[in-house]
Length: 251
Image 1 (cartoon, rainbow, N blue to C red):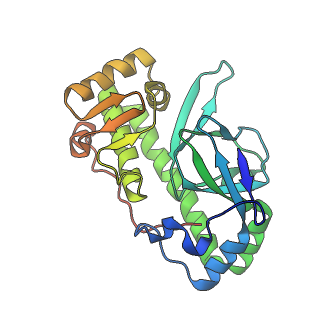
Image 2 (cartoon, rainbow, N blue to C red):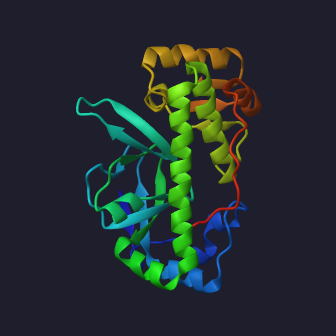
Image 3 (cartoon, rainbow, N blue to C red):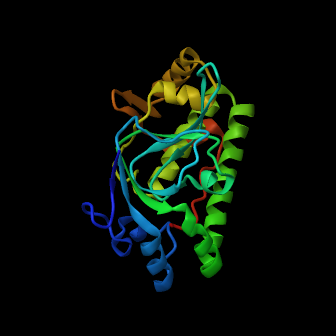
């Protein structure tokens, strides 16, 4: 991982952040943008497969994903892994460690990632002087809880085929909102093991389930990951209406 600061290499100015051009993110007032520019201390470049945050660690930073893919996960003592959610551009990661003193999950990069770095000590200033930004932080935390609720419902009550269709459609919908889905078709840089660990299924069962989606030409599988061919078809199999991506904050 490589950290760039104000005097260490190029960084993307907050005023020219490419994510702010996306209609899914709310515009900032000038004073908010000025504060976030000061709040940001640098950028962290992360290689694919690198661990960004470790469960149990007490990090001095929190991050906004500027580009790339990642995932949040927990491990059992014997090494079994449960993937909780996927991190995409615009997502805030590390907030839990900032408020609860230590992380209860880990974060790993699925692809090369670029992260905006913020000092968690400055959160107090944000809450004191920028209530709209403080509300944004609360909104982002609530949204994460909402996504986890839906994922828990899927793991607990959907069939294996419905779970797989839901997961891929869920990722595709989120990716489209932040520009990762601008390529057609969308390629998701995940392995079948990632899918198994997100669905709570064995790798063998996951492989058989994904084959059914491939046979229906809803997805295909390549060395680089999953290629989404038919989102509407996935939604139909999952019996799900899809994500409702409203205008949301970007810190």
